[in-house]
Image (cartoon, rainbow over all chains, first blue to last red; front, side, top):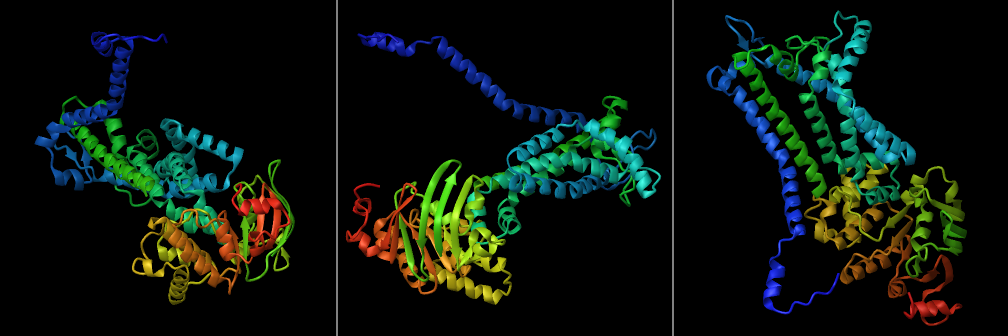
Length: 311
Length: 247
């Protein structure tokens, strides 16, 4: 760059005031990055506003808190006396998610411990890639597996009339949630400093004692966060549970009962309702409810995982 | 402990070559030398911590109570008899009490009253009891650096080791605490053998009865500590190092 001699104050102030191309590009990029940064917030608020607006009429006029949450009767399309109780749908979602966690927690914890503590080199890298690949399988594929493989399998194995039930959807959902839970749990285990492991091993602790007494307690917040994210995944999953639960409104008495999930109800019924009708609006109210639940679960998971990083 | 023709390599790089020395029971054996001399690598081989690093290759013989440590099937039993204190304190993320009770628990002690006694005795001997006796259930990892290092020493003592290895324990500790720990070590030698790796030559002089001088992977000299400091040396590099002319 050529040396520039500024001879008087006017030249100097002109140079400091100059808005050249660099200055404009800088401002432009700042603006673009800012928009990108806050777009997530805008979308979340926008979606919440839209869902609330659509369900708002029902909330104001027809909404009966007690009926909505405690009645197991879901007859939204009955022309004379429609009933809008979502208890059975909540029970459906909760039972499937609960079973999914029973399936997913041992799998994902075991996989995470193996990847983080035992696997080395190529095995480790290959496993990580495979777990991520597993997380990327579309949910409709899982639903398809539930419908065509699990369904006859459950009928044969347990001698029940229908194989589309809590067991089927719980296993499918558990397998779907396990990869992301494995990934997060593995991060939590990797965040435990090696000096803890070495200190414990130097004291004569076996590998299992090191993991059980030192590593798992140190990573417990991250592991809890992983489980909560899995629960959030279970609540929000739609297509696979729609295909694998049997989709019948029912408070399950056993894992062989068919159920229907909150999400699946919206997906299946929204297309058949008249825009603005009570039925249409109540589906959006369910949407608000789901939104709030997943929001709370994710927020809790996030706060817990953050706690790990600080501590 | 007897060490014979010990050579340690990382890949093709030799970190330590042809070390032979004896460490006597109930002595404080000092190892001095500048960085990269192979002091820490040496300690790691004594209780088979070389298994942490698959890159580390150990040749030669190390005898602990006459047994070759490289042939032991149960390295955990060996490690539980050899306590280690690392350069940087490692307060495990559990309570102070649990930190000290960990080793006894690992070896199967469950009785609360026995554990209480062990915890109090070890913390007292590590000169930490008075500072923490009212908050044994707070997190060990929240203590100050000097306190954590004494906690680490208390934890090592709770193993009731026959040998205590300290690797530059005073790096993260203030001078006053260092002196307190040094006093503790002088008492401990009645009960156990202590191997003290340090890059403070005066610390070796204060504590060790015999001292080895390591330089660039070679054991230059082993002798009575006082001899090394009064110029009774076989190798002039030793004199240069202890007098601070290099390193």
